[in-house]
Image (cartoon, rainbow, N blue to C red; front, side):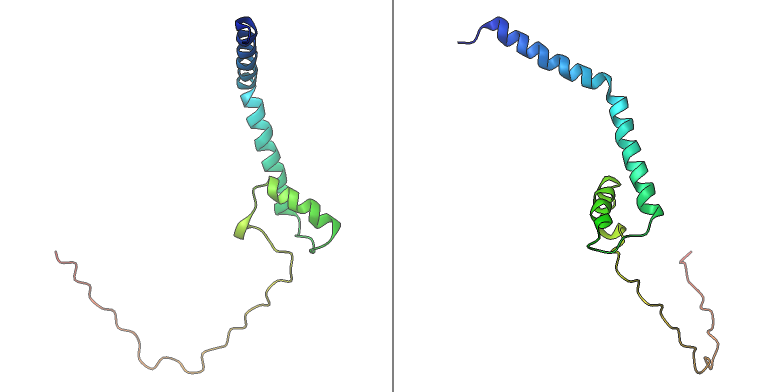
Length: 105
């Protein structure tokens, strides 16, 4: 059977650890937000490296730290070529007439 004094001491030590963490919660939150902001600035200010390079491995960690994932991140592959718009060959023959909207008032 465990000694009640030892059990009480263990409980007090674990509670005191949580109290210490709670006392520095602002510093922990500030540090976490600073890491997110700094890594987001790096991701936003640099081009995505080509896949397979040594920097791309580090860049994946930076993207993870900046919470950039899913459709928000660049792929690093070649960009899509520009769309070529074709001019309209024939203008519209009749102008569009405005319609009256009945609001039921």
